[in-house]
Amino acid sequence: MRVTFGPAAPQTQAATEKSGYPMPYRTNEDLPASVAHHLPPHAQDIYRAAFNHAFEAHAGDPRQEDAARRIAWAAVKRSYVKVGDNWVARRGDS
Image (cartoon, rainbow, N blue to C red; front, top):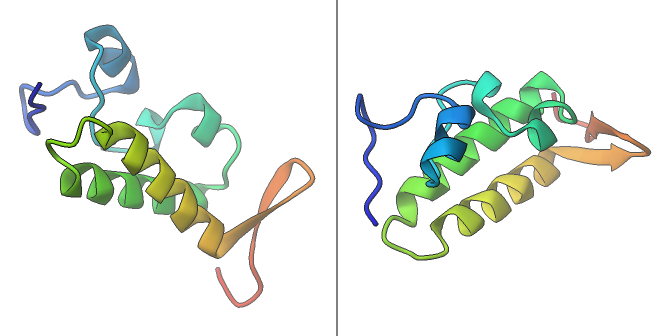
């Protein structure tokens, strides 16, 4: 299955879930609840940018969405660490 980016592609996470295929996230509001409700805004920006880049880089890979998710979380973990239930910036990052 080929995913298109542009006017024909879904614009929200809800539309993605209904259509059954993933998409890059246009805004932080489009991020999955597991990301949006747990990460601070800057960490959400990092996740979104990394996911979108990895999603495009892995086009055609049957594990495209999984790879993009893993890469996005790795990017977040380079700048943030989870302390208890909160994600906090690593020292020297902001």
